Every structure is written in structure tokens, then in C-alpha cells.
Length: 602
Image 1 (cartoon, rainbow, N blue to C red):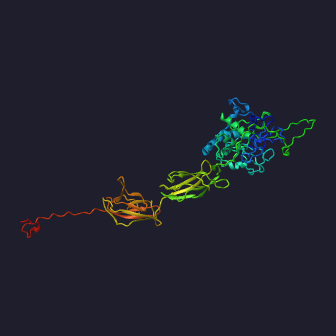
Image 2 (cartoon, rainbow, N blue to C red):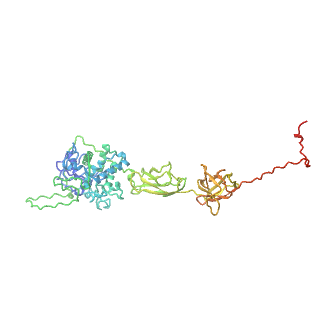
Image 3 (cartoon, one colour):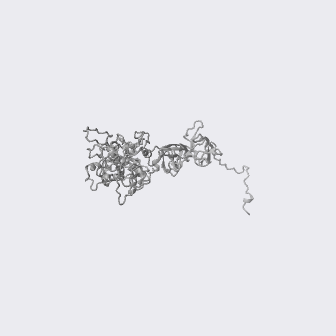
């Protein structure tokens, strides 16, 4: 897709099929082999085809929108009607082989774009058709193990001499020219266009137009711009014309698309078939090596002087042939300047707030992760889908209970995750924010869940706790937990029966706690209620079988601790009453006399 400003077709190659075939012969601009057309048009017609423009269109394109150019002899179109086995040698079954890395790049780009923009319906054969015309499938697959063209593929210098004039836009970073631009890579991107559409599809940290994976992904996104549906022929035509605004270019690319849709196969990198000239033994236009001037054989001077041909720079005027006006000129769909989808515009996600998050168990985090989607110039990008995801072993969740949440950036480019709520597991975790459908670095947020604390535990007033062996403590016990003077709800409190305040170890005898299943233990873990109170109901604490003094030790995270005395007494003993002996008669003790109320009536 090197930017060319003129078409050079051999004289007589004016039919639609031959014109398309002639363009196919160029197979990819063949930038290293391209030559400047003669100013006198001696090589053939320079008429502009229907729907084309003799000068660059004001609309944007990958190539700078200069008309399509070819300098090679015409070849038969690969889309010849009939079975694919009945094709000329130069476009026969061997041409259906696509180098393995190039084929993989096209397929990867198709799958990636179908996941992020399914409505585009991009078939990989469209990328293959453009790649064939632009660079002969990266010069027959001459790429290294990472998919980078070796040597780099460069179009001719766009200095206005035989080609469009485009002054340098990249400081020579991609094309090595600090004065003028050159089309670069297997898909022949102008550096200024690559600056907008360039991708890092192979995740090597670079956006390299000479890398077939990066270039194929960028070309696919470009073709899908403006919500195009490439399953519709009108949208597909418009997409290809936006890549290079030339009717011959469109016809040639579509011819190769149809050819590849009939069947193709992979061949080893570096063994792809390239178009060659039938007039010079195939030495020109193979795209394998940079152009080397052929030596000029010595000639015998002619007795009749021959006037030299004027150079292109002399701008000798050319009298064009009158164009043939068709009965019904074809209608070229308008080329709409492409618009990048929001995700493709994002260069990075910047952390705006809440880089470090903390919360106590069971509570919501005070802040939420927030990022800004920014383009390469630092401007916010709206309409970007940002996915927030929790990584770690805690049971923290977003509002709604999930570990992932997708948010779309607003007009300011900001995206804020839903509220995070800590569970009951303490520890650290990470929240990562990524752009859906992109491989940009994630924005990471560190988060920590800590236990709720109480710096003071105190028994609410009550009677001393006493119980006899074999019974239970009848009194209800209440303990209030506070932290910095405020009630501390939801604090985990450990209760242990001990025998000493100075050496608190779990007792092996005495009181114990009654569990729900009927067993007894001397250590339990409880939690304060919403009012910060911890309650032991009557009967929850058994006295045990050994009398003595014991202590209920209570501790909480944050330093709160207290002891409650427990006294266990032995049961009281009762002496039996002696039986009185009978009194002898006449002992002087008067007998009892019935009271009048109990005497029998007369």
C-alpha cells in the first residue's frame, strides 16, 4: 500500500480484467522494486479509472490515499472462473499457499476482532487479499520467529517525484527517513496512520508495523471502523477503498479474497510464491531483496542521435487520451474517514484514586478503585468497557456478590468499580482493572482486610458469679466492647476458663461452656452484637465438679481484655434431727390439754 500517485499500465491493458490483473502483479506495492514512472507516459495509459481520483483524496487512508500504481507486466487475475486447479502457473495452486506466520497472524486478527467487534464480521481472507497486494504476503513470509519482516519492508520515498509528497511524520522512527515518509511493513502503513492505528498484537511491548501480527491486527481494526459490517458488500467495498481509494485496487483485492476463499494452505515461512515479470525472467518485482540497479551493457552508438527521455522531475506536460465514457458509470461508495472504536483508542489506564484500600471484616471499603482511560496524547476516552477483577484468597466481593464487574467510562474517561465489601477472612488481595478486548497493562490496586478491634472489654454491672458444683451459673453475663470510646460491634472475642490471672492457661477442671451438641469446652469464640455487647445467657456456663476460684478471661483484637471471677462452692451439708424419747407417766410433766377449738363438742 505504498502511496503512489499514478498508474502505469502497459499499452493495451485497458480491460477491467487485465487492469485488475496488472495491479495484482504488483502484489503488494513491491516497494523495494518500485520505479518512478516516466513523465511522458510512454509505458502506457495514465487514465484514471471510474471511481478513482488522480490526486490524493482529502479523506484519510492507510496509504495517504494516493491512487494505486503498478510497474509490472499484467498477470492473469487469480479469480479466473472455473475450478481453482485450472489456473495459470503464476497464479495456480502454489499461489494458494500462505506462509505459516502470515496465515497465523491473519487468523489471530480475525478471532480477536470478532471477540471485540462481532458486528464487523471480518473474514481473514480480506486481510490475506490486502496482504497479497501490499507485500506479497510479507515477501513470501520472510519473517523472523516473532513475525517481524526481515529485512524490513519499505515503500518508495514519498518525495513527490513519481509518488505523493508526504513530509516526515515519525522522525524516521519506522521508515528511517527524517525528510519524507515511506510506507512500512507487510500491510504498508504510512507512519502517521500507524501512529493512530498501530497495535501490539503479539504482546512483545512494541507496536511494530513490520511485524505481521501487529500490522494484521491494525489493518483489521481500520477496516472495521465506523461500525462497518463486512458481511455487506457495500461496507466491504467502502472498507477496502478507505484503505486505498482506487477502483483497480478494490477489484484486485476482491479477486484475491475470492481466490483464497476457494481454498488455501500453509507453507513454511520464506517459501511463499511471489509474482514475477514474464518479460525479464521474473527478476523484477519479486520483493525478496532491495532494488539493485541492473548493469547497463555497452552499446554501439547509433548513427542517428536519439533524444533522451525527459526525467520525471522536468515535469514535461502530458496530453492525456480522451477517456471513454461508459453508458452508466459505476458508483463508488463515499469513503467515510474511519473512527477508532473506543477500546482501540486507549493507550493506558491511569489510577485516579484509592490505590491502597483497607477494611475490617464484614464491612464495606471506604473507597472504590477508580481509573481513567487515556489515549496516546493523554486525553480521556469515553465509552470504554473496563473490567475490574478481584485476585486473592479473601472472601471480599463486589456489591452483588461477584468477583468481577465491568464498567463503561463516561465522558470524562473515568470508570469506578462497584463497592467492595469484606467478608470474614482477613488478608491481602488485589483488584486489577483492564480494558476489555485489549492487552494493555492492568491498573492494580492493593487491598487489605483486617479484623475488627476493641481496645476495651468491661463487664456490665452484676452480682458476683457463684454456683455450687454440679450446677450452672444462674446469672446472665454481659460484656461491653468499645474501641476508642465507641461501641465495637462485630468484634471477635475469645473466652477461656483459666485458674490464674498472671499465668492464664486453659483450666483442666472446674467451669466449662455447654455447646449446642451437648459437649463441654473451656474455650469459645464469640462475636459482639450490633450494640457492642457480648452475652452469656443463664445456664450457658456450667460450674463443674471441683470447688474453687476460677476466672473467665475475655480478649479481643485491638488489646481489649478483662477477667470475671467465677466461684464454685461445694454443696451445703445438713445434720439429721434426733428422735425424741417418750416421757414416763407421773414424771411431773403435764399432759397436753386440747384447746377449746379442737375439743370435741358436747
